[in-house]
Image (cartoon, rainbow, N blue to C red; front, top):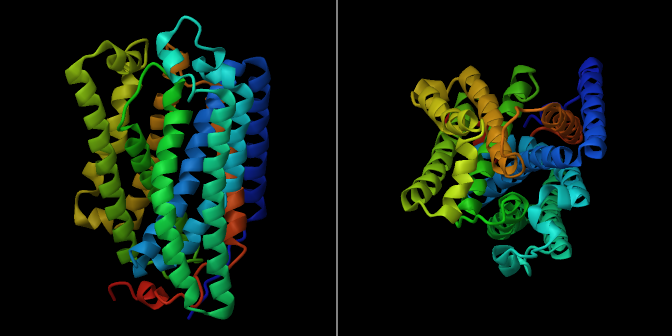
Length: 387
């Protein structure tokens, strides 16, 4: 059984990522001090986006264990590499707490506002911070336990590690569905505290699935092209393509369901959310979102050969990650920016600075262990997927 080689970034690539991270985060730090309202909101968008990519990797691992998906065993270390960003992603999101009054209107108090007064017990600064830390702590704990078990199985080949991973994964998926829904309500929906949507949590869970599968596809194909993950064949690519096709369609269904029901009911307290996103210069990006996030990937991946093409899946996965960032941007930004003045330098700095740091962390994690999980009972099935 081949262990495949571990990952080592070329010195020039490592340096390019390091410089990009330093410059991006430096510009963002200046923005946080000079224009805190814009800076902290840009940080929220970037931190939430990259955190969901890491969480998507963890969800990919858990779904593979619970579903006994042998084909995904050859991609597990890729997903573990994505999940390695979780401690750093959690730290970047915690920084947002320092700018709470600049991002969240409710942090200024509920004087004279009956809607905020009714929500004041929940939308309370210390309680908000406690919920954030609790959710992040839970996800980090599950990630650590799953990673430990995977590495331990490399060493001692005990089947008990797989059984334990299945139980942990089932518990994680249940806990994550509830905790991430709550986190989405807190971190994104409460930027406009007068608005609420019961589908918002499911909508963001679909976003995590998309981000995770797209990132796994991008990293796996890069490693495959570099000759480091030769176990990946067109059948694995096909399954990733089907996941992308299915999860983007699920996301589009939830996008349409939320928009259609609010548009049809036309209640002022609900419609205000979409009015803000279709006026003041936001309309183009709002309608671009479902086109970029679903229609184009749907059309490209509809033929079976496209889902089996490494090039097609790679390009669509990159595109979908960009569309996912746009989706997060549209959820977080319009609440504090009624008139859209364009994607500014702080948005780009947060995306690129955190993204370059993300790439360095993932590369380091992929270089810390063999790219194939040794002694995994499903690995033989994964290596000969549909042979």
